[in-house]
Image 1: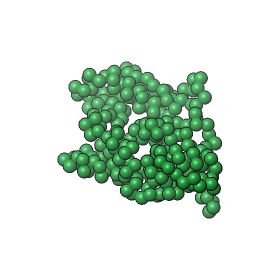
Image 2: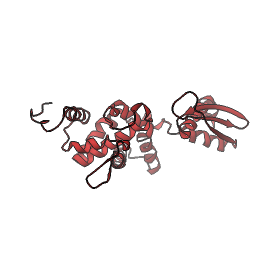
Image 3: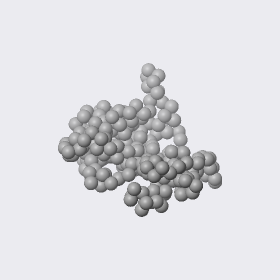
Image 4: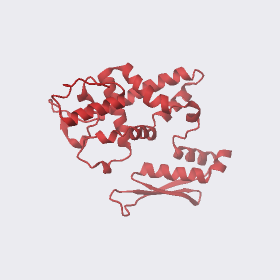
Length: 245
Protein backbone atom coordinates (compact mmCIF):
# COMPACT_ATOMS: atom_id res chain seq x y z
CA UNK A 1 0.00 0.00 0.00
CA UNK A 2 1.47 3.36 -1.05
CA UNK A 3 1.26 6.52 1.05
CA UNK A 4 2.02 10.13 0.06
CA UNK A 5 5.61 11.09 0.88
CA UNK A 6 4.47 14.09 2.95
CA UNK A 7 1.89 12.17 4.99
CA UNK A 8 3.85 12.17 8.24
CA UNK A 9 5.61 15.53 7.95
CA UNK A 10 3.71 16.92 10.92
CA UNK A 11 3.98 13.74 12.98
CA UNK A 12 6.76 11.87 14.72
CA UNK A 13 8.24 8.68 13.37
CA UNK A 14 6.39 6.88 16.17
CA UNK A 15 3.07 8.30 14.91
CA UNK A 16 3.94 7.21 11.39
CA UNK A 17 4.71 3.68 12.53
CA UNK A 18 1.45 3.61 14.47
CA UNK A 19 -0.49 4.74 11.38
CA UNK A 20 1.12 2.06 9.24
CA UNK A 21 0.59 -0.64 11.87
CA UNK A 22 -3.08 0.22 12.40
CA UNK A 23 -3.67 0.41 8.64
CA UNK A 24 -2.26 -3.10 8.28
CA UNK A 25 -4.53 -4.42 11.05
CA UNK A 26 -7.63 -2.69 9.67
CA UNK A 27 -7.08 -3.34 5.97
CA UNK A 28 -7.91 0.32 5.23
CA UNK A 29 -6.55 3.76 6.14
CA UNK A 30 -7.95 5.62 9.16
CA UNK A 31 -9.25 9.13 8.53
CA UNK A 32 -8.62 10.46 12.05
CA UNK A 33 -5.67 8.69 13.63
CA UNK A 34 -6.27 10.50 16.94
CA UNK A 35 -9.37 8.37 17.53
CA UNK A 36 -7.28 5.22 17.19
CA UNK A 37 -4.60 6.62 19.48
CA UNK A 38 -7.27 6.97 22.17
CA UNK A 39 -8.28 3.32 21.63
CA UNK A 40 -4.91 2.30 23.08
CA UNK A 41 -4.68 4.83 25.89
CA UNK A 42 -4.86 3.15 29.31
CA UNK A 43 -6.42 5.08 32.19
CA UNK A 44 -3.09 4.92 34.06
CA UNK A 45 -1.66 7.39 31.51
CA UNK A 46 -3.88 9.97 33.27
CA UNK A 47 -4.55 12.02 30.13
CA UNK A 48 -7.30 14.64 29.78
CA UNK A 49 -8.77 16.43 26.80
CA UNK A 50 -9.00 20.23 26.40
CA UNK A 51 -12.21 20.25 28.46
CA UNK A 52 -10.65 18.32 31.33
CA UNK A 53 -12.41 15.03 30.58
CA UNK A 54 -10.43 11.82 31.17
CA UNK A 55 -8.99 10.32 27.97
CA UNK A 56 -8.64 6.54 27.76
CA UNK A 57 -10.00 3.61 25.79
CA UNK A 58 -12.89 2.73 28.12
CA UNK A 59 -15.60 4.77 26.38
CA UNK A 60 -14.52 3.37 23.01
CA UNK A 61 -14.57 -0.09 24.58
CA UNK A 62 -18.21 0.47 25.55
CA UNK A 63 -19.06 1.55 22.00
CA UNK A 64 -17.13 -1.33 20.42
CA UNK A 65 -18.91 -3.85 22.64
CA UNK A 66 -22.25 -2.58 21.34
CA UNK A 67 -21.12 -2.67 17.70
CA UNK A 68 -19.78 -6.21 18.04
CA UNK A 69 -23.05 -7.35 19.56
CA UNK A 70 -25.11 -5.71 16.81
CA UNK A 71 -23.07 -7.01 13.88
CA UNK A 72 -22.72 -10.52 15.29
CA UNK A 73 -26.47 -10.57 16.01
CA UNK A 74 -27.25 -9.63 12.42
CA UNK A 75 -24.92 -12.33 11.11
CA UNK A 76 -26.51 -15.02 13.27
CA UNK A 77 -30.02 -13.83 12.38
CA UNK A 78 -29.23 -14.25 8.67
CA UNK A 79 -27.21 -17.46 8.95
CA UNK A 80 -29.46 -19.41 11.31
CA UNK A 81 -33.08 -18.70 10.25
CA UNK A 82 -34.35 -21.60 12.35
CA UNK A 83 -32.72 -20.30 15.56
CA UNK A 84 -35.03 -18.90 18.22
CA UNK A 85 -34.19 -15.96 20.49
CA UNK A 86 -32.62 -18.14 23.19
CA UNK A 87 -30.42 -20.01 20.70
CA UNK A 88 -29.25 -16.81 18.98
CA UNK A 89 -28.48 -15.16 22.32
CA UNK A 90 -26.45 -18.18 23.42
CA UNK A 91 -24.45 -18.27 20.17
CA UNK A 92 -23.74 -14.54 20.32
CA UNK A 93 -22.52 -14.91 23.92
CA UNK A 94 -20.04 -17.54 22.80
CA UNK A 95 -18.66 -15.39 19.99
CA UNK A 96 -18.26 -12.25 22.11
CA UNK A 97 -17.16 -14.04 25.29
CA UNK A 98 -14.33 -12.39 27.18
CA UNK A 99 -12.11 -15.42 26.51
CA UNK A 100 -12.70 -15.17 22.75
CA UNK A 101 -12.16 -11.41 22.62
CA UNK A 102 -8.90 -11.84 24.54
CA UNK A 103 -7.77 -14.36 21.93
CA UNK A 104 -8.62 -11.93 19.12
CA UNK A 105 -6.66 -9.14 20.79
CA UNK A 106 -3.68 -11.44 21.28
CA UNK A 107 -3.77 -12.65 17.67
CA UNK A 108 -3.50 -9.04 16.49
CA UNK A 109 -0.87 -8.24 19.15
CA UNK A 110 -2.78 -5.08 20.06
CA UNK A 111 -1.05 -4.73 23.42
CA UNK A 112 2.10 -3.51 21.66
CA UNK A 113 0.34 -0.17 21.02
CA UNK A 114 -1.05 0.35 24.53
CA UNK A 115 0.19 3.52 26.21
CA UNK A 116 0.24 3.34 30.01
CA UNK A 117 2.29 3.98 33.12
CA UNK A 118 1.92 0.36 34.15
CA UNK A 119 4.38 -2.25 32.84
CA UNK A 120 2.58 -4.42 30.28
CA UNK A 121 3.65 -7.50 32.20
CA UNK A 122 1.33 -6.37 35.01
CA UNK A 123 -1.80 -6.28 32.86
CA UNK A 124 -4.39 -9.01 33.30
CA UNK A 125 -5.67 -11.15 30.43
CA UNK A 126 -8.66 -8.91 29.77
CA UNK A 127 -6.54 -6.05 28.44
CA UNK A 128 -6.40 -7.87 25.09
CA UNK A 129 -10.18 -8.07 24.71
CA UNK A 130 -10.75 -4.59 26.11
CA UNK A 131 -8.45 -3.00 23.54
CA UNK A 132 -9.98 -5.09 20.74
CA UNK A 133 -13.42 -3.69 21.63
CA UNK A 134 -11.98 -0.16 21.82
CA UNK A 135 -10.50 -0.63 18.35
CA UNK A 136 -13.93 -1.63 17.00
CA UNK A 137 -15.41 1.47 18.63
CA UNK A 138 -12.73 3.64 17.00
CA UNK A 139 -13.50 2.16 13.58
CA UNK A 140 -17.17 2.99 14.01
CA UNK A 141 -16.47 6.61 14.99
CA UNK A 142 -13.88 7.09 12.26
CA UNK A 143 -15.46 5.26 9.35
CA UNK A 144 -19.03 4.31 10.24
CA UNK A 145 -21.06 1.12 10.33
CA UNK A 146 -20.04 -0.36 6.95
CA UNK A 147 -16.31 -0.30 7.71
CA UNK A 148 -16.97 -1.61 11.20
CA UNK A 149 -18.98 -4.49 9.72
CA UNK A 150 -16.23 -5.16 7.16
CA UNK A 151 -13.58 -5.39 9.88
CA UNK A 152 -15.66 -7.71 12.07
CA UNK A 153 -16.53 -9.93 9.10
CA UNK A 154 -12.86 -10.25 8.11
CA UNK A 155 -11.29 -10.45 11.57
CA UNK A 156 -13.96 -12.24 13.62
CA UNK A 157 -16.73 -13.91 11.65
CA UNK A 158 -14.74 -15.22 8.68
CA UNK A 159 -11.85 -16.90 10.52
CA UNK A 160 -13.50 -17.79 13.83
CA UNK A 161 -17.27 -18.22 13.59
CA UNK A 162 -18.29 -21.81 12.86
CA UNK A 163 -21.87 -22.44 13.99
CA UNK A 164 -21.43 -26.20 14.49
CA UNK A 165 -18.31 -25.75 16.59
CA UNK A 166 -19.92 -22.97 18.59
CA UNK A 167 -22.88 -25.19 19.44
CA UNK A 168 -20.51 -27.47 21.32
CA UNK A 169 -18.41 -24.74 22.93
CA UNK A 170 -18.73 -24.33 26.68
CA UNK A 171 -19.11 -20.73 27.90
CA UNK A 172 -18.90 -21.40 31.64
CA UNK A 173 -17.76 -24.63 33.29
CA UNK A 174 -18.92 -23.26 36.62
CA UNK A 175 -22.47 -22.99 35.30
CA UNK A 176 -22.30 -26.58 34.02
CA UNK A 177 -21.06 -27.88 37.37
CA UNK A 178 -23.68 -25.97 39.38
CA UNK A 179 -26.48 -27.08 37.06
CA UNK A 180 -25.39 -30.72 37.33
CA UNK A 181 -25.13 -30.55 41.14
CA UNK A 182 -28.60 -29.06 41.37
CA UNK A 183 -30.08 -31.73 39.09
CA UNK A 184 -28.38 -34.47 41.08
CA UNK A 185 -29.34 -32.82 44.38
CA UNK A 186 -25.69 -32.70 45.41
CA UNK A 187 -24.30 -30.01 47.68
CA UNK A 188 -21.35 -27.99 46.38
CA UNK A 189 -19.04 -25.34 47.77
CA UNK A 190 -16.30 -23.08 46.39
CA UNK A 191 -13.87 -22.48 49.24
CA UNK A 192 -11.89 -19.38 48.23
CA UNK A 193 -8.83 -18.09 50.05
CA UNK A 194 -6.02 -15.69 49.26
CA UNK A 195 -2.81 -17.29 48.05
CA UNK A 196 0.11 -14.97 47.40
CA UNK A 197 2.78 -17.67 47.17
CA UNK A 198 5.99 -16.41 45.56
CA UNK A 199 4.20 -14.32 42.94
CA UNK A 200 4.30 -10.51 42.85
CA UNK A 201 0.57 -10.40 42.03
CA UNK A 202 -2.04 -11.50 44.54
CA UNK A 203 -3.54 -14.88 43.73
CA UNK A 204 -6.63 -16.68 44.95
CA UNK A 205 -6.89 -20.42 45.42
CA UNK A 206 -10.11 -22.39 45.22
CA UNK A 207 -11.15 -25.81 46.46
CA UNK A 208 -14.33 -27.08 44.84
CA UNK A 209 -16.16 -29.60 47.00
CA UNK A 210 -19.09 -31.68 45.82
CA UNK A 211 -20.74 -33.52 48.65
CA UNK A 212 -18.04 -34.39 51.16
CA UNK A 213 -15.20 -34.61 48.60
CA UNK A 214 -12.82 -32.03 47.17
CA UNK A 215 -12.96 -32.71 43.42
CA UNK A 216 -10.75 -29.91 42.08
CA UNK A 217 -8.35 -27.12 43.03
CA UNK A 218 -7.12 -24.09 41.08
CA UNK A 219 -5.51 -20.69 41.52
CA UNK A 220 -5.64 -17.44 39.54
CA UNK A 221 -5.36 -13.66 39.90
CA UNK A 222 -9.08 -13.29 40.65
CA UNK A 223 -11.69 -15.31 42.54
CA UNK A 224 -13.85 -15.60 39.43
CA UNK A 225 -11.02 -17.00 37.31
CA UNK A 226 -9.96 -19.42 40.03
CA UNK A 227 -13.53 -20.71 40.42
CA UNK A 228 -13.86 -21.17 36.65
CA UNK A 229 -10.54 -23.06 36.45
CA UNK A 230 -11.52 -25.33 39.31
CA UNK A 231 -14.89 -25.92 37.66
CA UNK A 232 -13.22 -26.85 34.37
CA UNK A 233 -11.01 -29.40 36.13
CA UNK A 234 -14.03 -30.77 37.97
CA UNK A 235 -15.97 -31.05 34.72
CA UNK A 236 -13.29 -33.16 33.06
CA UNK A 237 -12.87 -35.27 36.19
CA UNK A 238 -16.62 -35.98 36.28
CA UNK A 239 -17.34 -35.73 32.55
CA UNK A 240 -18.59 -39.30 32.08
CA UNK A 241 -21.08 -38.93 34.93
CA UNK A 242 -22.15 -35.42 33.90
CA UNK A 243 -22.68 -36.29 30.24
CA UNK A 244 -25.00 -39.14 31.19
CA UNK A 245 -27.15 -36.90 33.37
